[in-house]
Image (tube, one colour):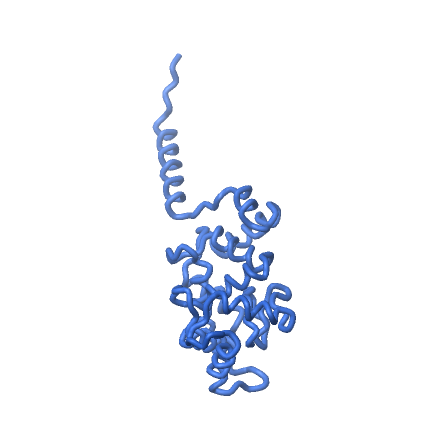
Length: 224
């Protein structure tokens, strides 16, 4: 005897298919954990924990810039982290599509937490090289410094001078710009930073030392 599905069954099945299609278009599904494990320096168990936290903050599976800024601002209620979060977001958004996926997040975090010194410095150079042309200019470094000071806010001790960002930039270029051509290349950046890694404890507890502890691990050049 042939059994035909009832109308309600077909309706439920259709709704289920439509739901799956909607989820597939709205939510980003990450690569298999085994592949991410092979591509990163995290274990499968660590990736599972990280993914749960990532999904808790970003149920869609991806983070746009505005959401990233909102999350980051929670760590700096005393200042304005908007501009620095913008630069940091662009560093994580390696394919420049306007969003950070779990894969993007893991790639950056793996370098910052467990990469070699050279890998971490390369990542930092990419952060400071705002227009991604392969050079750090004084204007780019000044934008970064101003963003960091804005993020720190006015409640700092000792009180920061108004020209402190520009002074940092001048010190940076005195140390880094070896051939005095007005820009810093990645080779100049890495060579100079490697000479003073021990002085500033570059990646202690995956945090940067810029008179405060940042919640995101960002390598710091030795001029700070």
